[in-house]
Structures are given as C-alpha cells and as structure tokens.
Image (cartoon, rainbow over all chains, first blue to last red; front, side, top):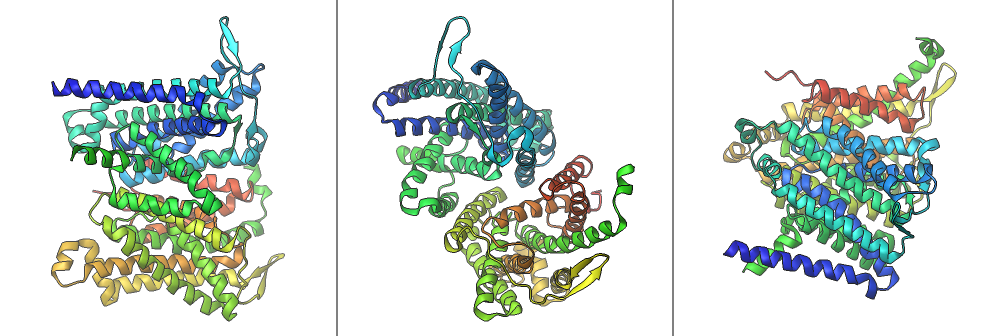
Length: 318
Length: 294
C-alpha cells in the first residue's frame, strides 16, 4: 500500500515537473530560456556521472573527456557533411564518447577509490592535450565552429531549431535519458553496481565479474555524457578545448555533491543550483565567482554530505 | 634508428641535465603530496595551488626585501601556516570519512585559492629574479648555475625530510601515527597535532618549490594546475604514499619528457608521461617502484 502510494506520488511529481519544463519556454524571456536549456544539458552530464559516483561508488574526474569527445564528434560530423544532419551528428558524437570511455574504462577500472579518481583525471587530460595541440584537425585553442543542423526526420519534416524547439528537443532527450538511467539503476545490472559500491569484495566472492561490470558502467556513463556533449554542441554551435579540461569534470562532481549523489534527480538540481549561484554571484564577484562557490562547496562536503536533495528529504520526513 | 643519429650528443646531455633539474622540483612537490597521503589518507587536490601561492608569496617578499633567500623562507612559513589553517578548517571535520571526500573538499579549496590568486594578482605573469645569474659553458650554451642549485637544494630538502622522519623525535611520532593512529594516541602522542604538522610540512615543501621554480617560468595563477597533474602522475607511477618511489618516478618522467621535447613541442611531451602511466597501470598497477606484493 505504502509502496503504491510512493509510486503515485513519484509519477505525479514527475509529470508536474515535466509539464512545467515544457511550458517554461513559452513564458520565460529569451535569456532564461537558454539558461534553462543549458541547465538540462549540464544536468544530463551530471546525471551520467551519478551512475558512477552514486551507484557504483567510483568518483570519476574524467567526464570532461566524454563530454568533450561527444562535442567534437558531433562537430566533425556537422562540418564534414553538407547539409549538416542531426542524425549523423548524434551517432558521431556518441562514437567519439564511447571510444574515449572504452579507453578510460579499460585502464582506470583496474584501480579503486582515489586511484580511480586520479587516473580518470589524468586520462581525460590525455584527450585534452591531443585536442589542444592537434591544431589542424581540432582547431587547437580556438576550437571549431559550425552551423546548427535542422530538426528533421528524413522524408517527413524538417524545421530549423528555434530556442523553443531546441528546448523541447533537449528536454525530450534528457527525460528519455533519465528514464533509461533510472531503469538501468533498478535493473539487476544496477543492483550489482550498487552491491559493488556497498561491498566490492563480497560481490566478487558471490561470483560477479566486477571488472566487467565496472567497465560497462563507465561505458554507459560515458555514452550519456557524450550525449550531453552533442546537445551542447548543437545548442552553442562550437566545440572548444576548454570543455575537455579537467576543471569541467570537477564541476560535474560538484553538481553531484551539491544535489545529492545516488538520486539521478539530485545532480540536475545540483547543476541548476550551481548555474544559478554562478549567475547570481557573478554580478557581485564578476569572474571571481568561484571563490564563494568553492567555499560553499567545501561547506557542503563537510556539513551536508547527502546534498540538497538528501537534506530536503530528511527535512520533509521529520 | 635513423632519428637517433640525428640527435647530437650535446643536446642529449643538456636535456638530461634539464630533466634532472625539473625532476628534482617535481620530486619536491610530489613528496609533499605523497607524505600527506601516506600519513593521513588525504589526497590534496590543492597542492598545486599551494605551489602557486608559494611562488606569489615569494614574488611579494622579494619585492619587499630584495633577498631571494628570505623570500624562500618566508614563503615556506606562510604556506605552512596556510596549510595548517586549511587542515584545521576543512580536513579535520572529515577525519574518519571516506578518503574520497578529502579529494572533493580539497578540490573546492583549490578553486578558492586559484581564483583568489587571480583576483589578488591579476592574470599577468610575474617574474621572480634569480638570486644569482652566473653561467658556466656547456658545449655551446651558457648554462645557469641557478638551475643546478635548485636541483641540489631540492635534494637537500628531501634529504632533510627523510633524516627527520628517520631519526628526529617528532619524525618518529609521525611514523608512529602512520602505522597505528589509535596506538600512537594511547602512547601519548598528540595525534591531531601531528596530522596538522604533517599537512603544514607538506604545504611548506610545495611553497618552497614554488619559489625555487619561479625564476624559470613566469608566476601565474594557473601554474598549479600543471603541477598537480604531474604530481598525480608521479605518485601513481611511484606508488602512492611511497616517498622513494615518487622521487624516482619524478626524475624518470621528467627525463623522458625532456628527451621527448627534442622531437615534439613541450606541450605534447607530456604525452610521454601518460604513456609511462598507462604501461605502469598495465603491468604494475601498485606502482613502478614498489616491491612486488607477496
């Protein structure tokens, strides 16, 4: 009975938020419309990383590589093929991200805990150095610019992206990804990941090949991060090496910790909170907004380890 | 093998010396990092920022006093104090939690420190004047004595640390705390103070290396990022918490990068360290310079 009521509450909340996000671009001014779309994209990136941080217990500092490769993969397809096609850019970005994820997963899953965190960081830097120095292909420091593809289904219709349709497209992709990720975490596979988080040695003793599970987890996480990269490329019409730098990975971890790890929704809340905080603080601190943001982050690590969502949940329960 | 003949012997020798000099500085940074990790299970993401702030304190003190050596000492002390403050405010509350939380907390600290430096000193690189400008002739180059002095000084600091840990009373306290924190406490060692002191010592080493390295490159707010990355590579290759291993690894990868930069640009030379890291992870994931676990 209780469980059913919980389900009803969950799906009601889900639908309400979805409806709000759907009508939002109709009422918001242009700036905030773009801002909301951006929150969704960063939220997807953070959510993909939650699969590792929250569910498998592996803190990845390498998500900028997957995000960046998704971005550059999409950029390559958009530049190489005329006219630019959405249905070519997305798989190209996903292939790029999957390649990076396979590489990182194969090596870093040999290590655990902090060693995993450090090696993912170093491996994502490999991609940064390659992208930054291989100027002929990647545009080096300047990155790549390209035109935005049309929202089209071949043979059916084709409309150019406006900020409204782009928002709805992003919302659809992020919602689908959320549902898929939620399904993954509740599947037997996701249960094994959570059992790795709780007790790796025991999971191994029961007979699960945990190395293989970890590699698949990193690959899945990397794919969704790459999808976020594709969306970001489509929204902003450029790819830049800055997004591959490890500070972006650090921000993704911040989103997770602020929002609450192991909740999937938490990271989106965290991304929204972080971006709003940045928007608000940069009015007072201009480009030094990371000073207060960093301080708030440290305070949250110390005092609020479950993040905003965990805190809200406990507060509601009391 | 043709490309080997294309490189004259003298260039190879110069790069060997360059590699050892950078390697010693890197060893100084990495040994502070590995000391902090080995003794208190803290991965200090802000270590590169302490290096960078050390260089800035050096710049400021040098401008005020005009003496490089005073700047070196002042920078070490100030950064040691800063390290103690960081430890007491952000890391002590995390004592007993997962070491992963220390990465997160120190990452936040590094964001604060880096942007503070940007705010305080601006984006333009500052210069630290070398304490002496003598040269000696190395083939066709005038090689500055100062670089050799840095290498020797770094070696001296690391040697002093080792002697202190091995024979000093407080050094023995530190090692006792590493082995068994609870037992050390029971024997009357003030463990909380030992941990604070270790963090301060590690920070001071980072600060000192910042000042020593300052004259070779410009001092800017982002210089810590390169160094924390290299120091991480070094501690993974050398085996985390293993002082001798990280020194050996620091010199190894600096030498390899110096040789690599004969053929490719320095920005690409760091790929060589990545390759060494990958090979280490493939064949000896516990570290290159760690005895094989039985």
